[in-house]
Length: 222
Image 1 (cartoon, rainbow, N blue to C red):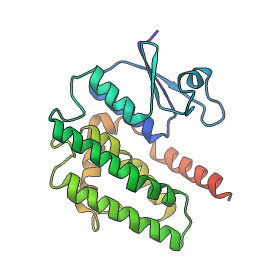
Image 2 (cartoon, helix red, strand yellow):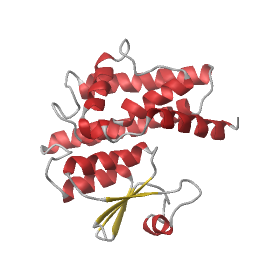
Image 3 (cartoon, rainbow, N blue to C red):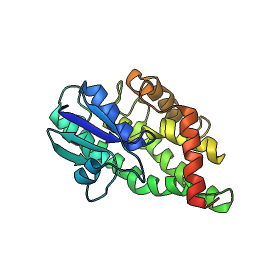
Image 4 (cartoon, rainbow, N blue to C red):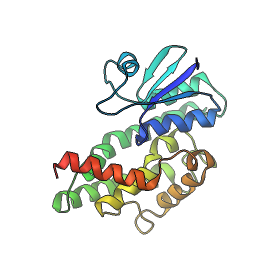
């Protein structure tokens, strides 16, 4: 029996955060694919009775839920190749910028995902662009990665923008993360996807494209 298990669902960008972190740390783990949303395992419901969703990391029989909490747990449990900065101030800033996108960006991200062409979609795209501009100017700056020369906690947290959001843009026909408006963040996305541990552990583009279309149709009732 594996000491570390990860309950996940293949298109979830939050599950992939955890996969990337485990790979960076060199942690061996057993991956358990869940049937989301209608065929969740008894183990998942047992390990995450509050939210009943993935990801759930099980270490030594003890479950940890919520991707960002899992990332910090992984970082503290396996300190090699640290994800969060060692300097307390820099560590606090990484958490700040992560929370900024959670609070300001994620609600608009969902509006874009489930919007149809029109005024509401244009408004959501404009608002999300402003959030990303702030991230580009204040958090990324002139660095290759948010972690400097190598990816760190913030890169992993923002990683869904490099592949999931870009695929979503294709589906909805709106381009926000593009070189003209966000040159440094667009280059970051390209750099991020070239990191071997990331490149080798993202979903197939066409499969993800079809999945995003399917969840939009279900949400929009069309």
